[in-house]
Image (cartoon, rainbow, N blue to C red; front, side, top):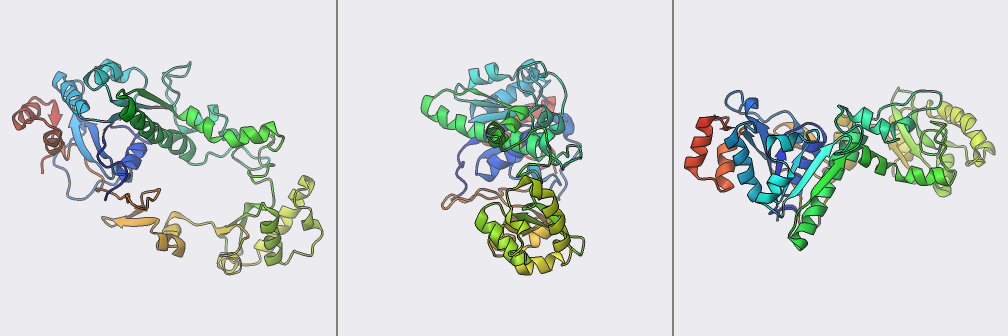
Length: 387
């Protein structure tokens, strides 16, 4: 049996970043997701090899001109058979194209209309351009990534685009589809990266309230590299290891395996005045051995330890190999679908597709007559990357 969303049909209006990521997650979970590209994106026959963008995996691709009346009509025809549609334009764009929530839900009252933006559908910033770095700044997240005495460090674009954006869009769409199955009525899901990034900071708002997190002292707190027992250390070979020995029993194991268990200064684990000096001492200790030597000492213990690996190293690590955390498809190593299900196994349904690669097949499978498809291709309302 395929993934838990098998039988669900979702339309993805082509975009970048969090929208495609959400669509990939939904496809990995078994939904039939069709990506709608601009007709102008089709520049000839689809190549034999798969597209290089792994975020496009698992779904077929059609090319529709949404500025052509018959292109709009074609998308609305597809909407009739869909459970959800996701889009990532600025507020108002889909409405101006004639395929906003009102038009789509008139054709399909049970449709879930998922919207992905940085700032949300309303608010003073709603129409402004932005990227992950801006959204996590306004959400109150970026200010707290970084070391003491240094400026904020953007954590790639994982917090805004993918954690606060794509993940929340996928969750919102699934939740709304569940509700629509019970109520018979769809709804709009307004997903904003600034909102999602703020939610990801919930624990730290709690820590701030209880005095466990000083928002004005970046890099001095328990989880932001302030503590000597929760940080990354360089080894003698220039590689790094990570330590997260917060709980007393894990901290005791750290001291035992580093030979510091009889050191009275290290007994003051939660004395913040000691964190700096103790970190300096641990820096010297960890620099005496290579990363592999520390792995031999600390792996499979309760230190809360792991080597800091690159992507390629992670794919080759025995733990990830045994769990098949990474898979190879079309000669390309990539993360496997997650999470895992005991009965409805998720899988990568297909390789990343090129714009318009499946236009004719998708339109036929979704109920359009062959004659109508031929007319649409002839008029330019849709394009097929014929091979």
